[in-house]
Picture 1 (cartoon, each protein chain N blue to C red):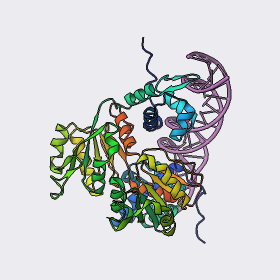
Picture 2 (cartoon, chains in turn blue, cyan, brown, purple):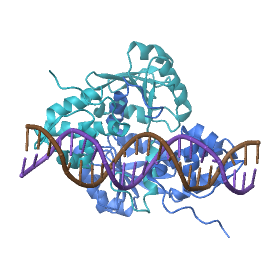
Picture 3 (cartoon, chains in turn red, green, blue, orange):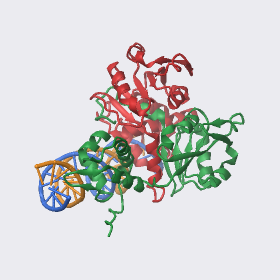
Picture 4 (tube, rainbow over the protein chains, first blue to last red):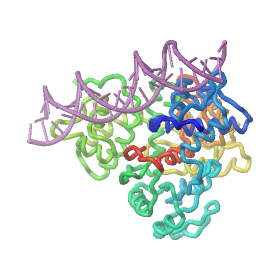
Length: 218
Length: 218
DNA sequence: CGGTGTGAAGCCTTTCACAGCA
DNA sequence: TGCTGTGAAAGGCTTCACACCG
């Protein structure tokens, strides 16, 4: 009989670190490493060994005492828990500097995400190619997002357009949003949103310039 | 006599939110709003009113009971605490998609950061213009970073180059790094580093696709 | 032995609830 | 009266330390 699944709830903080462990494991896999101890994994991910063991214990029991974790098995298990066993479809709204850069960014496809649409309101941009996707008219967002079965929307518009875009994609059935516009976007319950503000990242770094920064990743 | 400064240490979690409040305050300032209550500010920033009051209490006493916070005064105080009263000089290492997009991104200059250099190893890119900066040879990093008095370095290279770049800029005197390369970069004590991995952001969103996401910002 | 999995302790963060001031 | 500033309580996360197993 297969082993029972781990406890039902994974702490938010742990969820945010699982992709980091996955990245390290994939590198190790590519390098042909068969097993990794919590110590090794911790070192490569930049966290503590106790943290690794506690985090992984939420998935169940995937290590072997005296040996460590099986790289292949753990890679598969974390990927499965993160919902990465199916290809996720991404739409980018806003074909400016950032939107275009993200559309061409290799790091998405190599991790199993596929950019299926990119939108803009500027008639000069509509119809032009970005990577291997054509920029579509933002007015067609509702229909295209639905027909292309978009799972995740990236908002790379100027701040004033962000809330409207979010409302539109949520209306079209999207339930995961990554917002790069420097403004707070609110969504109904049941929709996940993460905000990435590059200016804020610099401002946080600015704070710690004079002081002693708390170890490594601020 | 001027009022005494607030308590000496600001919690890390608070520091990470101050730039968010600053963003809201600047918008309010631009709109001509004179004062904001913790309730209003909380609503616009997407946090709770209690959180706002607790966070701001670490700066000292800048509110007026019965009224709220003076927008201009609080804007200045938070900016000062974040070290934003002087212009900070930014270098971008890696003139690929992302590096070029960031070099042209208006959100940095509008917030008081100035991109003073952009580097790449590719001879085809060296000498070309990105925004109003010329791409410099990465071998010149140590000298240019020092002579341009770079405060913050953005790493937008492929993963394999990231650690080398970090070592180089730290050697040239940089003490704040924002790393976009999908790999863990370690730095000596006294240097601050923040890691932004766009693939990880998508993977976190993926996790919450099936489950009920914890309120709003995951 | 070596290294995982885990209760318990400690620390940090958020929320509560209200005293106190404009 | 209205809203801030803040102790106290609650909750969540990280670290510790060791029992236990391969």
